[in-house]
Each structure stands twice: as structure tokens, then as C-alpha cells.
Amino acid sequence: MEIKNEAMLITYPDSLGKNLKDLEYVLDHHLKGVVGGVHILPFFPSSGDRGFSPMDYTKVDESFGGWEDIKRISEKYYMMYEFMLNHISAKSPYYLDFLEKKEDSPYKDYFIRYNEYWPENRPTEADIDLIYKRKPKAPFEDAHFKDGTVEKVWCTFSEEQIDLNVATEATRAFIKDTLTFLADKGASVIRLDAFAYAVKRLDTNCFFVEPDIWEMLEYAADILRPYQVTVLPEIHEHYTIQQKIAEKGYPVYDFALPMLVLHALYSGKAEKLLHWLDICPRNQFTTLDTHDGIGVVDVKDLLTQEEVDFAVQSLYEKGANLKRIYSSEAYNNLDIYQINCTYYSALGNNDDAYLLARAIQCFTPGIPQIYYVGLFAGENDLELLENSKEGRNINRHYYSLDEIKQETERAVVKDLFRLLAFRNTAKAFDGELETTDTGEGTFTLTWKTAEETALLTVDLPKKTFAIVHSTADGEKLIF
Image: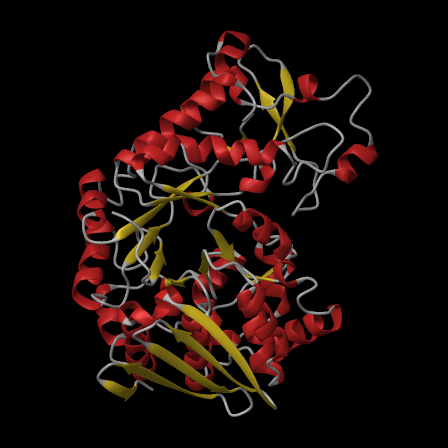
């Protein structure tokens, strides 16, 4: 199914109910018209990281269901699937075969071997320092072979996620086979997770290495083009990287928006947010929340360091049930560029502020993605956090079907559903955006086509907004 200019739900396969059948029930009984697309986070057999350590892309984890469940959903919603371009599970048949057979393994070229990558007497401390890392450790793990030998392999993230050598013919064949398989299974978009880490080259920081990274992106896009499937590279970094990718015709993520909206709502000032709305890519998926934390690195230079510090400090002061320790090593969080919190709790569980944030997202250029916890205006889940000691679980609540039914009766959720339904159906959003700063934290965002206009009027200090929809039949106040 082709991508629609309609909101996309982001969810784990077992977060809205217990499995994919429950997810389909929730979509059909509660979310019709609310979302037009679904990004199902990894549903493959996995050895860790809530699915992001995939063992086999040809299978659906039995605890979630089967391909027939994915197929039914894909016939009703445009779909996004995950492909971890950078790594594969340490429990995958490919890596296990490599450990058993070493040089005789047909998969030996899938992996980046330390002794083959580095010249003699390297890496030096300077080499390791140069590598772009999100965690304070050298990106290597010991591979223990059946013959008793040990050597290091590249491992950017956890020991369960062994990096792939995307430069070899063997890995390229694996990438092609996997992407075409997923395209045949109903994907509209395939997200290339950890994309910027995939290319490693000596004497670089091994992050978004140009020009190699462009060749990698085009390789994936060329494979999927005959299937009319879009690739979406996932990158958390400086906003100019997103702009460069967009300039080459690829869709991108707007990961700057979450902190810019929080800064605007905390400060009552609109200038930095409006500047971004004027210059941001138009072919993008917008987010306020995802399965990870609220990104900080993405707003560098869109906000000054003082403004970033203010927003982060305000998040901890105004956020509900939030502590700095939840984003620390004590809660298994070593990514210093993200803060673990639901977006609703980041705004103090305040309905007015939260709906205003979502209204701004709906009027931001691009297709709005909304994470399942955010869709139900979910608060920080401290019980799950403490039971697991996993910081990101604060924003990964498991909803039962009964709980979902109750949540849909909350006024804030009903209003959010109504807002998203309007965003999905108003043709004005196929037009052009005009931004107008009306001073003292107030502004308007206007989407126009020849036939329709959608006008959002915002007062940041008061946390209020209004939406007016104008068609040939006249004006209608939506909110």
C-alpha cells in the first residue's frame, strides 16, 4: 500500500494487547480514522533490546503471531517495518555459524574482524577516541570460536548486536535478500535503523561517512524501488544531516521537533520553533515521542546551549514523576543524548499543554507519527521502570485491551483522536505552510491549497489553541 498523508502509529507488536491479533483489534475497533499507517517495531525473533537484536527476518516471533497477522494489517494500513542495517543478533544463525566454523563459515564476511580492519599496531587510543560513540566503551566484543581461539569483532551497541560488514559481497547479498523479502510482505516503508553507523572506514569517525554512506543508501533504495517501497534512514544527529538527506530526495525524520516544542511550551517563546518550521524538510515523518528517549542532540544549533540547558532543566522540573537518575547508568542508560520520559509526563501530565503540542505536530510539515503511549496520553510507568531497571521502559507501558477501552474514554484522548482524524482528512495539508509570528509567544500556522485552508492559532503562555477549517462550504471551528 502506498504511503498516505495520514498519521502513523508507532507500536511494539505486544504493547496494545498481547499480540498482533490484539493490535489489529485495537486498530479496527478504536483507531479507525485516527491513524492511516502503522510502524510495527521489530516483530522478528530477537535476543535482546526489545526486538532490535534480530535473529531471523524471515520469521515473526511466535509469541506475537505470524505473517498472516501482518498481512491482514498491511491490507488496511500503510506499514513501516524495521531493518537493522548496522547489526544482527549474536544469537543469529549467521553469527553462531561463524563462531562454530570460523574461516569455513559462509557468513565469515558478514562481520568486521578487528585484526582485518586495523593495520599493525593499531588501534591507538586516538583511533578509538575518533570513533563516534553513544556509549563510553570501545565498539568491540570478543568472539569465542569453537576451536578455542578468540578475536574481536565490531560491536557498536550491546554485546547482543554484532555489526555487519556492509562493504562485502556476502553482506550485500544478505541485505538484498532481506529487503526484497520484507517488501513482499506488505511494507510501504522500511526503516534503516542505526543507518549512520553502518559504514566504517579507517581514519574516520565511522558515523555518516561520506561519500560511502550515500552509496549505501542508494543501494538499499535501488533494491526497493521496483516494489514501490520507500527507505527511511534513522539518524539522531545534527539537523543538517537530515536536510542533506532530504535534498537528495529521501524522506527523513524530524527528531528536532520534540525538544523545540518543549522549549516553546516551557519558555512561552515561539521564535526558535517557527524558524525550524520555515527551514525543515517537507518530506519527513514528524515525531514527539518514540520507543527511545526524548532526543537532545538533534536540536544543537537550532537552540543555543543555554536554551538546551533550560529545556532539559525545565523537563526535570516540570515533568511528572521524572528524575535524572532514570536516564543514567543506574537504569541501564548509557546514551547521554536522550532523556527517558513520556511526552505527556514531560508536560506535567497537563492536558492543555499536551494537546497544544500535538496540534503543533499536526501542523508541522511532514506526516505525523505518534507513539502508542503518546496516543493514549500515557504517564511515566514507574512500576515497569523499577521492575526492569531499564530507563527506557518508563515510556514502554503494556496496555491490556480493557485498559485501552478505559483510556479511550478520557477527554484528552478523545480530543487527540479528533485532532488526528481532522489531520488525516483535511486536504489543506496537501498544500503549502505559512508561518506568522504574532508576538509575545503567539503565532499562526496556515496550510493552504486552492480549495481549502487549515488555520492553527497558538498562544504559548496560555497553552491554548484554535483550529479553523475553511472549505467551499464555509468556515468550521474544529477546536
